[in-house]
Image (cartoon, rainbow over the protein chains, first blue to last red):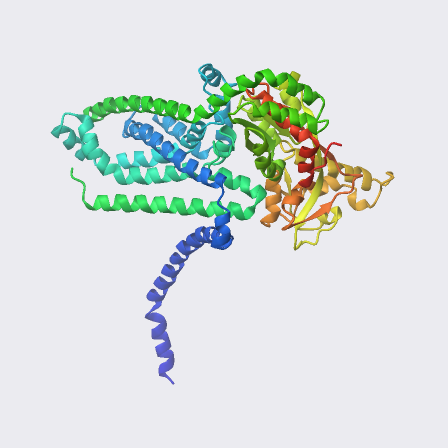
Length: 284
Length: 330
């Protein structure tokens, strides 16, 4: 009887630290659980709202197939454009102490904070036939709105900053000494860029490419205003989903599922390919 | 460091120039690859311009009988090429137009491509020179705006197409038990409407509220019902949780439960009859939405555009629209 309080005291003394640590780790694990549930529950709800597979197959119509094709084509072209423009841009801006670099940074980031509808309006006012630039294009018979080029432009506009940001970070993380050594070995700077800098930055570049491709794939507001919602011509998957909401919410969630599956497949595929290539090692 | 970055800069500028060239080339290739369809369409339309006179004359006869549609179809079947008509239509027409699309395409050598959005956005797009052949607005205002800019064909005119009326929608299970307009003022009721500034349905909704207040809520009015409606406009506005970019999105808010009630058109009730319960708004306070249609002056397919408008105004076209809850002109 008399030993009981002692035991209690010891028990209280001993594992105090352990118990406190358990609480913290449990609490800490709570955060990722909340985050993951917050992402998974809405996505799961979309999948659960779709009827059985036999019914779902009837939901595949021509417009849906066109939208899938158009989304894949435009987001891929956008990504190519973004990388062709973005890699040199990011490289030029890396570790430069140029006056006004902060201003350049801000300008590049504008599309991230710009509401997509505003981006669409801006593109419309800049390139529609009634604008000064559009008027010039019209003389050559080029009308951008209502054309697939407008979709690519809208997607590139909103998705580019995401690539530029990760590309710059990737280039900046490379040890300057390695770059110096590389440039000493070979007089051609393009050679060292291709052989040393690009492979070292590849992880960041791929991450940026996935991010901006995904953003391009999901682009809605700017495309709706600038490229219109023309089935088979400019109607990408998000626009098809938006239109389906007005007619058939099941159709909308079915197309949403396709969009989610395609996006998942591409992201996992790219990660897998890049991962296996990296395991072969970079040869500096 | 300095030297290294400088030399990289040179190669990067070169790469940048190359990239710009590549993008311009890619854009041109893309444009011509995809623009070829509309290019052939232009050719075929010039071939049919000779028949324009007959079609416009039938149009001024404003869809008199089936004989007028017959002449139109006969002139159209002369051209073998399929012309693409871009129809910019108010969002509320989405289900009706999608339903009539295949039937009309089958009988006429045209392919209808719809661009559904709020009438205000469509007006902005057309005013900016976005290629469109036909514009159908859920009001007269947006067609008038284009008229003021002299952008309409057929002597810069537009015509009435059909009528629609405002209706209140609640979910089938109606959790807030809303059966009258007064129920909207119950605490906690969340309402979705189209943004009045750009969405005609939203504008008409506000007019309905004003009518309710001045007729039902005014003790000196002959339609006076109850003092509950005395400050209806202001009071009901405090319940609005969402002003959407088009009328369909307001309805979607109810379908998803984000709102307890939404104001839309009578026609919205047809396509959503399975999930929504429609509460009619009495005619003494309701507002008549007049849909207007115009052919765009810049359209290169005016013959076919006029033919489609003629068909919409014909008894068969009006009957189609009536099936989807719209009120025909006659």
